Amino acid sequence: MKLEIMVSSFLSVVLIGGFAVASPEANQLQPAQTVLAQASEAKKSVWKSFLSQTGGFTILMPGDPLASKQTQNTQMGAIDTQMFVVERQQDSVAYMVAYSDLPPNLVQQVSKGEANVEQLFRGVRDGFVESIKGKILDERQITLAGYPGREIWLELPRDRKARNRIFLVNQRLYQVVVVVGKDKEKYLVKSVEGYLNSFKLLSR
Image (cartoon, rainbow, N blue to C red):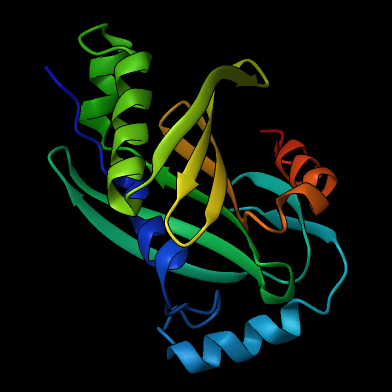
């Protein structure tokens, strides 16, 4: 059975155009102009640790992330995705981390061997690439605390590039993404690498 998982398409709006974001407390959508004003304040902040108890992770981010929640309808059922974003407009870069709890029937298929992890990652990758009209430049297998993952390098519209790290931790799918303008890429190598490497799971 071919897996057509589109859990990455929630990123397409962020990568290509304006977006609306919900605050963690109110979980109410805010207009794009409010988000941009908040992002302008966030970009002044220094790198600091961001911890999500609900998400079960910690990561370094250059400012206080803006949070949003989105539901994506897939062939496997509805998938809720929680996303955290810091956008630094002066550097033409956005840092994003997101997590989704996959439908139990899909997890059961993987655990029973009816579908494998490779199929799952391929579906996530293809959904991501299709939703943002990107082009895959490279891909490799990675792990996080013993859990399987993939890292994908992509070329995006509007002279941008992205690195997306995907991890499957039991039922939860994590994505850690950096989107950067090609003209800024060489100046942000250490920041991008440091951000991606700082993603850690909380002890259970």
